[in-house]
Amino acid sequence: KAGVTQTPRYLIKTRGQQVTLSCSPISGHRSVSWYQQTPGQGLQFLFEYFSETQRNKGNFPGRFSGRQFSNSRSEMNVSTLELGDSALYLCASSLAPGIVGYGYTFGSGTRLTVV
Amino acid sequence: DAKTTQPPSMDCAEGRAANLPCNHSTISGNEYVYWYRQIHSQGPQYIIHGLKNNETNEMASLIITEDRKSSTLILPHATLRDTAVYYCISLTGNQFYFGTGTSLTVIP
Image (cartoon, rainbow over the protein chains, first blue to last red):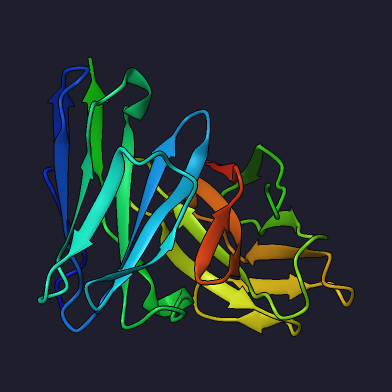
């Protein structure tokens, strides 16, 4: 079966712009989580969506937001981009919140570079 | 606050067992320990998880100390394709807490 698909794979934006990243979960998976990975901070949890509702949120400023659609696809948006937002953004999907381990699958990520 | 700590890097000879330690002395009694690995430019891949007992699957074995303060991931016969960053992770409230991971290099 198809894995978690993230688009685009690479993105270059200018400071002050906004960006939208997309994540299509594995078919049948209804929970989507987002992570930011940087060399300095490692992998950090951004937020989790289930049934179009945000269930958990990490410690990130309000410039980072997300949403989930009725087909479980999710988008995350970063407004007023800063140089420090340059990172690999990963999403992970599972059947439902709390189902992790083998059933928690990551995509390959979107590499965002802010210049 | 990191709930897990790991050595930053390790080397292992190809064909030998790779033993990757993790300290998780602050996790609570009902928190599982998960191991994932990340090969360069890819998303993390699930390896194994456990709570109290030792676990084994087709990829690896997980040895958890009786006091649950630490664990060791064992790759029994490391290959070059096992070169990756290995994360020991705790799950609390549906959030994964990743540490900084161990960069394992398998040497021919």
